[in-house]
Image (cartoon, rainbow, N blue to C red; front, side, top):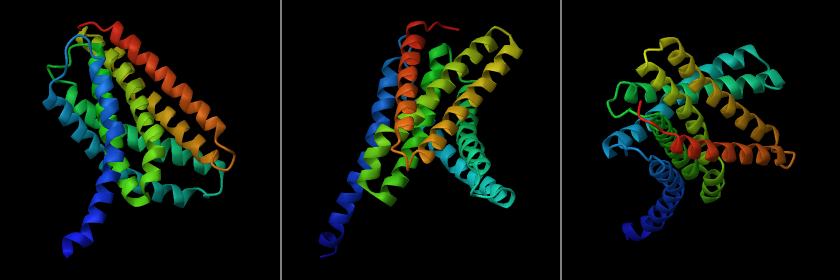
Length: 241
């Protein structure tokens, strides 16, 4: 009797989790196959997915703390509040946590021997983050949320990972060449640019909810297109460093 009562719930939750996970896995496979020179080990990639999951938990704590500070300083009904909320509290918390786990798990790894590896690593961490975030969303809000996030939020995180990874790979190249200043500069870029894109993504999405969302659609389309081009070019021009 107990089985017949819980089976529909378990089946429904399984479908929701699958809907949350499959888009992230699809994008991981695409980026993995774009790595022409030398495939990364499954152990390292799995480690990066877990790092992405952990980074989502760290980001959650950061966002809670920063939100408390923001609410005590600014009025929630102002433009300034929304800008700080989406660009600093959300975007900086999430992208900094991703970057922290990315660097900790890859910077000194012997497998990091080509520029495109940076794209692979950053994308896997970002999609690990998105995977865990998506599971929590769809279990709370249902299948419709999974469908929407499959074509917006998950690819969005992948795009932020692509931009992070492109600059991260260049930073590693300069590090190998002993150019410490240039390496540090591109490491800064690898955090700042994804954070700005992430903040813009969230800000436009929220502001456009009552206006049809056409600016958001255009922004997402351009973001995906540029990211797709970057992956292709970074893959074709990849060299050992």
